[in-house]
Image 1 (cartoon, helix red, strand yellow):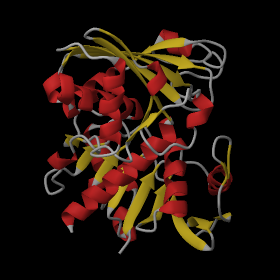
Image 2 (cartoon, one colour):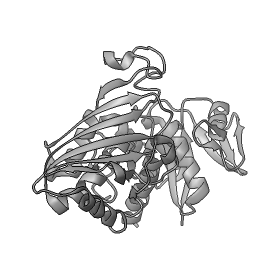
Image 3 (cartoon, rainbow, N blue to C red):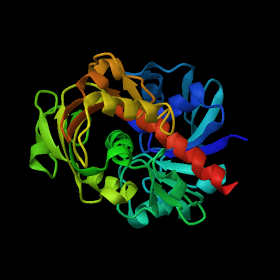
Image 4 (tube, one colour):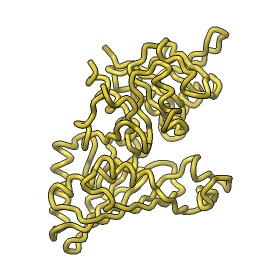
Length: 341
């Protein structure tokens, strides 16, 4: 039986989830969606996407006094417009798991409103300080116990990229400390296309024409939770860059031993073909950001950029922020629901 998914927030992540389920995940089913936007707007955004192209199927908007729906290849998916999780009747749709993808209801009583309104499990699409558990699939999913962990954080896309590189290197050589610099493709919030209002002054500046430095406290928080043995030893800074999709993380590590670049790449390649297969990849070709659009892996190591100066090592990983991360959300949804069955 397919895992029945509810999505709160039909934004970038929510619509990517819907595409993946429709095109390549017969074991999953989107059965209900909540978003405050009107039904015709959501249908049009699902049908046409500036990064992913046209939706591979028919998408129609159905507005009705008895309830709106998005009709995908003839199958209606109920669409509600509740402003807060407590008011979404997930129980009516018999969902197995809700993916909280608005970016607004990520912690505290707000996100737990989904549980009160009938969701058995909630997966939050970002790092959050008070989830029952923070999971990075491929690294610490063995910690998952859905009988105790009902609000689960799926880290964030940047944490995945960094964590999937650092974990195998730590196990092989021991990491003393690490810093990450992230070139992050711009989004609508934070980092507006034109100058706008935001509570951090640097992020009020136009991301379409500037490189905008930004702190990433959520990355540090999530890394400390999924790699507790390295807590307090990893720092990160992001630069919002004016590209449409795909980001890159440059990771600099101080190791417990001297290692050359070829050995580093071999270690990552071994991880990518064994424990981290499907999550990590190693590319021998020189890449640019456009080459990585559509990768389902959460980290694609650019092997030609790996360098070593004794015990100081640099590795670079690319990631398609939305597409790879949406795949991990669905991987986690499978794990959470299957653990309860």
